[in-house]
Image (cartoon, rainbow, N blue to C red; front, side, top):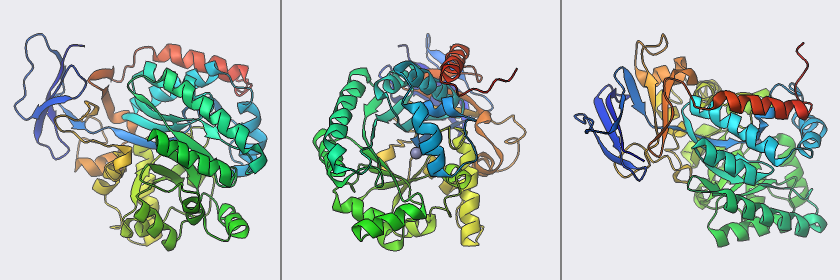
Length: 424
Ligand SMILES: [Zn+2]
């Protein structure tokens, strides 16, 4: 791969900046006076700002196929009656094209890495590699919280790990995913913790999404969800807890002590009406590591993290009764993975992966005013002009090679699964 130079851009603070990607996919140089060398592929970024890319901390990418299917239902009815029956019929091909479609959308929104949990994870990892983005890919472990089903579920999870590892190249990384404490037995939770430690792989789990989940945990185990996870060895610096809506102060203190990351999914939580916002201010006070995710496109229904970031900031300001509770700059740090080492938002500096986006400022939303505030409060993902991962241009002028083909394949898969209404 030839080296790539970006010239004529500005930083969020308005300073001139250029960037050179090395042949190894890292940032080789960064500075105001950078000019392209002869023969170098050059991106003339005049009029654009150079920004670190967004990190989608929680999604189920292939669920693009479920978009607009069985909306407006309670979480358990949505899952048990509508989603899980169709998921049983999905093939590798469905997951591959559903994930590719999600990648097209995320690249378009300036997201270059995501934390994915889905069935047929080998196909998901292949899609990530082919799309050119980065992801932690994990397969669900669900044993209906029945220890008798644990051995088989763990064996399936082990096979899924092998398939991800086979499909993974340099950008897809294997992880482990225990679905939730209400769907996974203690035996399986302990197995996940042990396998993750042995492989030095990250863990993902949905935690404390609904009040019913918390009540059932206290009923059954006598402790709250985070304490139960800790009892099972699941809380550590490589654990991502998705949602955390109903975590209390004692749980936030424990999560902080263990170094786990909570990924809030404000739009999915609002759409499913899970009973309140993630207690961000309390989490921040306890020093909890934080990220933000879209959740799956079946329950959000978009993959536009910038749009979700506005919702996050507004919900938190409103919950606190304080418009200064979260600033635009702080929200951007969360969305770029800077508030959790596990989410690996490396920032833009020499030696870091050459992952970045160029944002147009000749748009109505960004022509005026302070740019961080513009990005969070005025813009959506459509202001992203160029997306680059490991020095490779994945989108330029909002054009992504092969996007139409991906879209057509995804529509074919969703149609075959009976998820597309007849629009004729
Ligand atoms: Zn989820």
